[in-house]
Image (cartoon, rainbow, N blue to C red; front, side):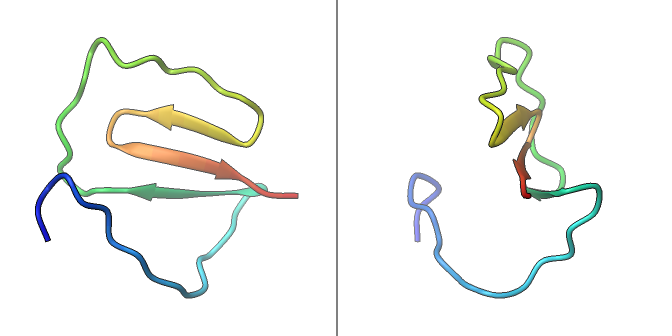
Amino acid sequence: MSEAEAGRGSGSVPVQYHQFDVGVQDAPVVSDLDHACNGLVRIADGTVIVMTS
């Protein structure tokens, strides 16, 4: 799998404070990244925060 391809999987994740994070350890910090939030997902450097109910 190349860096441009996304992997796929399934499983359980721990949820705290109605959210869980998906990210890559030691991911590069991107200073021009739009840190917008649409209420369901939020983007941070190297991480996507997924909101749950």
